[in-house]
Amino acid sequence: MKFYKDHYDVIVIGGALAGLSAALMLADKGKDVLVLERHNLPGGIATSFVRGGIEIEASLHEMMSIGSKDHRLKVGKFFDDMGVDVDWLKVPEAYHASLPGLEVTLHPGLETFAKEVDSAVPGTYEKVLKVLNLCHTVFDSVNELSIHPMSKPQMLLKHEAFVKTAGYSTEEVLKTFDLPQKALDLLAPYWIYVGTGFKELPFTIYSVLMADYIGYGSYIPRKFSHEMSLKMAERATEMGVQIEYKQHVDKILVKDGKAYGVRTRRGDEIYADYVISSAYPNSVYSHMIEPASEVPAGAIKMVNGRRLSLTAFSVILILDKTAEELNIHDYSVFRGDSMDTDMLYKDLAGLGPYRYLTCICHNLANPDATPKGTCSYSITTLPQVDGWKTVSADEYDEVKHRVARQMIDDMSAYLGVNLLDHVLECVIETPMTVSHYTGMWNGCIYGYAHTMEDHIVARLQTAEAEHFIDHLEFSGAHQISGDGMGPQVTNGRKAAKNVLDTMAKEAK
Image (cartoon, rainbow, N blue to C red; front, side, top):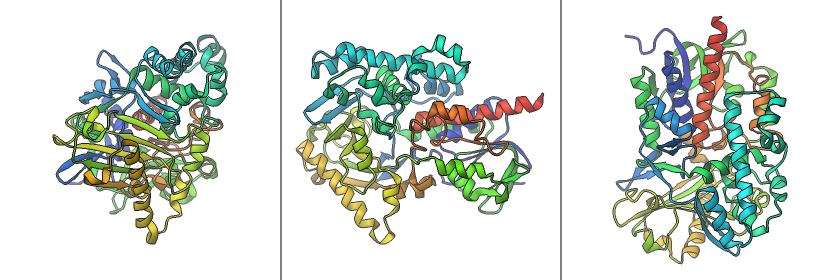
């Protein structure tokens, strides 16, 4: 019996959230799909691992676009519609901001959030609420326009706020509200989740982020992010998708400008009408297309013209006491010595010490995340990729431990507890870890940077021109909706929709 079929409708390269989302959507429409995953498990960075007999979350801080059972948002609804039953737990707060002169815990709900900012910075309630309501209006427009595109005159009539703010940066729009700096600081901590300073970050992107997280709150799976990917893979298999692990795709086969299959590292040539790649376009266009002569010059120009966003450096600790015993009282803490986002972004270009940290205690959203009497505590920063590219193999170990120690010492001083005295397990994840484990280009987890020249609105306008090879689609953090696990699901669905639309068009 042959290992692979003679032909598939679609081959999906990569079994992380984007690839699995594409496979689910295609299978739901009756398509014959093969997923090839280089690792021995699905999920990419949506995974967990075991140290000292304790399962540990590898990456997920919080999941956006889920919503409550009675008010699902687009990602939560997609899981429900596909029959992927994830046990979602709501994160108790938006975040705790630990900034110069500010120690404030903020909760989701537009009015609640505005009131809490007002308590810390009196007299700001109405202006902060106006900011959040504007974000929510833009968020609604983005969701509608992603499904129902319309002409510019129609957009101006129905989506005035979206049109009027689309050409402006976050800094430019927020300045018009004349808020005191401390209030602006409290509106800024989530900037790291999109990885661009406010001078360059389009207000459209900021609006979607704030409306989703602040308007509806965030969630985590009870059994860590691997619950998502394992259940997605299980459901896809039930729907007829063939998923094969430890199958590294080396080449995408192209003839006369059209993809027609792949070749794996072990030499299998597998044929399909369409290919969806979770691999970065940088990888695909630089060495995966066969023959190389099928790579258009415009494709190389496109990837060279885009700026990679951020990678990740995390220290994950399993500690021998409860969170309360260690003075940890918030699920999520953003800590920095400034909220000048553009300055902080520049600081991320180096190798530390880093001035902006994100700290998560999963037990405060999921009490059973670790054995009774212990807790997990992760300390994360998101460096730019270029700095870590300079680290040689000989100095890697020293640099890794130096940066990790600085982060642990910083948070120990903040908590008033020497965390090193309580460590049961310590795992350090570097950009090299991410690159090795997932194959992400240069360990970049955030795709291409959102800037005023290159973001969701601009990418939607250039999508057709940047479709360089027929029957080849892309999914993953590097695509239109951008970074994060929620957007990866959206990007996978978008790739599947593009395939289905092309199938329908060519069938006419």
